Amino acid sequence: MKTFLARVHASIFRVGWPRDDRSALKAMVSSIVLHVHAPKVRPATLRFRATWAMGLASMVLLLMLTGTGVYLMFYYYPHPDVAFRSMKDLAFVVPFGKVTRNLHRWAAHGMVVTVTVHMLRVFLTAGYKAPREANWVAGVLLWVLTLALSFTGYLLPWDQLAYWAVTVGTNMIGSVPVGGDFLRELVLGDASVGEAALLRFYVLHCVFLPIAIGGIAAFHLFRVRRDGGLVTSEHAPPDPASVDPAPPTDAAQPKKREARLVNAWPHLVYREVVVALVVTAALAALSLWLDAPLEPEADRTRTPNPAKAPWYFLGVQELAHYSAFWGGVFVPAAMVVGLALLPYLDRAPVALGRTFPRERFRACILFCVMLAFMGVFTVVGTFFRGPGWAFMYWPY
Ligand code: HEM
Image 1: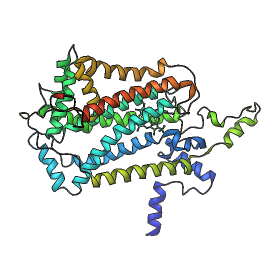
Image 2: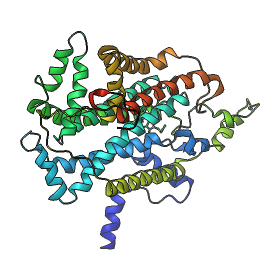
Image 3: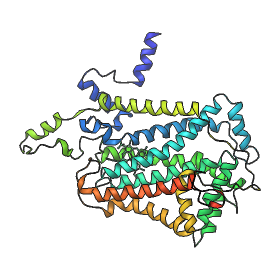
Image 4: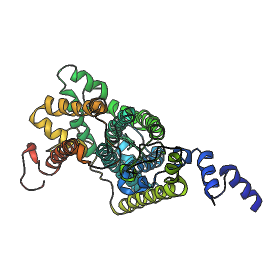
C-alpha cells in the first residue's frame, strides 16, 4: 500500500520536498503551478507593503466563487417559477446549501473590494508603466468583468432585492441618449426584467463571464511574469531602496544582483499559502456568522421605495439622480476609458515599486480623490437616501 501511495504521489509531485537551493529551483521550473513564479525574487518584494496581497486575494476569491458556484448550479433552476424555490431549497434542504450560498455571496462582494484595492495599489506603485501597459488594460477589463459577474449573479435569487436592483441597474443603460432602449432590451431580452432576462443573466453568469474572466486572468498572470512583475521577476527594475549608490560596472555586477535574490520556493510560496489561508478563514467565518440576504419572492407589482441598485453601483445611481445621462452613463464610461488609456497618456518614467513616491504625489492624490469621490457617492446612495430618493440626515 505504501509503495502504491508513494507511486501516486511521485506521479503528481515529480520533485520531492525541496531540501536545498538546487531542488527548490528544480521544483519551481518543473511544476506548472509553481512555474507561474520566477524561480528567484527580490526580498523587498516579499513584504506585504509591496503588493498588499490583493492580487492573490482576488485570485483566491475567484477560485472560491468557481468552486461554490459549481455546487450551487446543481440545485438552481433559471426560471421565474422555480428560481426562488431553489433558494429556499438551498437554505433548508440541500446539504451545506446555506453555507455554500453564503460563501458564494460574500466572496462575490469581497472580490469587488479586493480587485478595486488591487487596482489602487498598482496605481500608487506605478505598476501600469511600461512594459506593463497591456497588463493594466487586461486588469481594467478584469475589473469591469468582476462587476458584471457580480451584477448578473444578483438577479438569480429572484427575490425583491434582486428584481428591483437589476431593474434599476438596467434602467441606467436605458438612459444612453442614442440606442439606450435598444441596448437595454438587448440585455434583458424584453421590455422589462422577466423570464428572458433571468435566462440571459444565468448564461452570462455561469458560462460566458467565468470563461472570459478565467482566460483574461490567465493572460494577466502570464504577463505579470513576462513583464517582470513587481513580485515574480528577477528582471524587474531594481528596487530604489536596494540600489547601490555607485554600482560596479565590471563583470561582478550580475553576481552581486544575483546574490540579492532569494528562491521563490519557499519564501514567496509560503507567504502566498498564508494569505490564501487567511482569506479562506475570514470568508468561512463570515459565512458561518452572517447569512446572505433573501427577501420575499420577486413581485413586479410591488415596487420598493426607494429601489436601489447593488451597492457597488449605488455611487452611479446617486450620480444618475442628478443627471441620468451625464451621471449614470457618461461619467462611469469616461472613468473606465480613462483608466484603460492611463498608461498610454502618462509616459513619465519613474522608479517602480514605491508607494506614493514624491515625484508622483499629485497623480496619486488625484487617483485617491477620484476613488474617494465614488466612495462618498456610494455611501450617500446606500445610507442617506430614503423614499423618493430624498436625502436623509440619518442613515436610512
Ligand atoms: C480578477 C482580478 C485580478 C486578479 C486575480 C489579479 C491578480 C494579480 C496578481 C496575482 C498579481 C501579482 C501580485 C500583485 O501584484 O498583487 C497582479 C499584478 C498586476 N495586476 Fe492584477 N489582478 C486582477 C485585477 C487587476 C486590475 C483590476 C488591475 C488594474 C486595473 C490589475 C493590474 C495589475 C498590474 C499592472 C500588475 C503588475 C503590477 C506590478 O508589477 O507592480 N490587476 N495581479
